[in-house]
Amino acid sequence: MFSGLPFNLSAQQPVRYQEARRLMWTTFEIVAYGENQTRLAEAAEAAFEEIERLDHQLSNYSETSELTYINRNAAHREITCEKELFDLLQYALDYSRATDGAFDITVGPLMKAWGFFKGQGRVPDAKALQAVMANVGYEHVKLHSAKRAIRFDREGIELDLGGIAKGYAVDKAAEILRASGVQSALITAGSSSIYAIGTPPNQTSWKIAVNDPTSRARQVTTLELKDQSISTSGCHEKSFEIGEKTYCHIMNPRTGYPVDGILSATIITPRGVDAEVFSKVVMVSGIDKARAFFKDRKETRALIFYRQADGSAGTVRLNF
Image 1 (cartoon, helix red, strand yellow):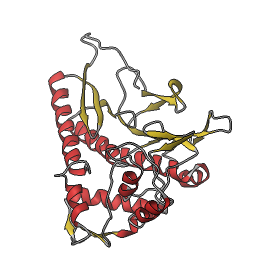
Image 2 (tube, rainbow, N blue to C red):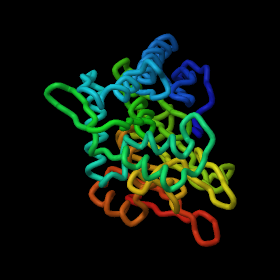
Image 3 (cartoon, rainbow, N blue to C red):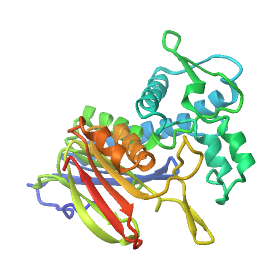
Image 4 (cartoon, rainbow, N blue to C red):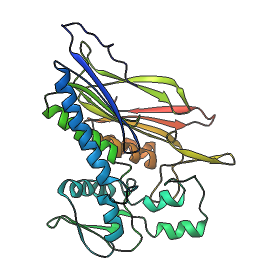
């Protein structure tokens, strides 16, 4: 993904630190440059510890996470949240309202119904899908700001932060690295969420390759990052086929069906959490609404791939 400098032992060159760990069901990697290898390692360790903490807190795969506790109990009583988690939930609901539900953290039941949660893909029948849709909708989540409390207004509501957690985690990791004095680093969460601090030595930016979503081995362009984040959502990440139909793992919360037509959306913006959310919004809303959404967001760029009539990928660039 990143094409940077080779490791150089010259005294004039900064030292390079690199480490990867498996967290949040993907691989997080930190590449950092600085004057002292030990200090880089200490800063990276603190960043990885924060990502691991968030993994334990935000996972709906864990029986002991704070999110699982909320999902099990918030329909019965108000649950007081840790401040940063409450702020993240408030942020998510604000964007649900701003996008008319194109981004919605209550899609958990839909992910299960379509077999994307710990299982093989399947197409639910119409009756089952109708029942599931009764438990999907951000309006069922009630937040009490003064108490930092959350409550669901009905049984069956579940929060799924898979569409926002990695972007949030790379932001938090970047904060820790900067606070530790790191001025050059790249934090990656799989191939979907990336944060760039400064630039590599002797370069003007971090170079990020973008591949054709219909042929992942083919690179179509390179994007440049400096003190920015990039996030890509696409159907290539996870899908299944039945007959000649391919079903994407990204759900349209308003219809109950996987998105169709948009192949992938790559967003560049100052914050990772925004980049990840905006990429989901584009996948669900489509190109025309994406144009309107990004019209007044000049600090944000979007590279959208869509399926053309002949099956190849067409592209739309916004704010480039």
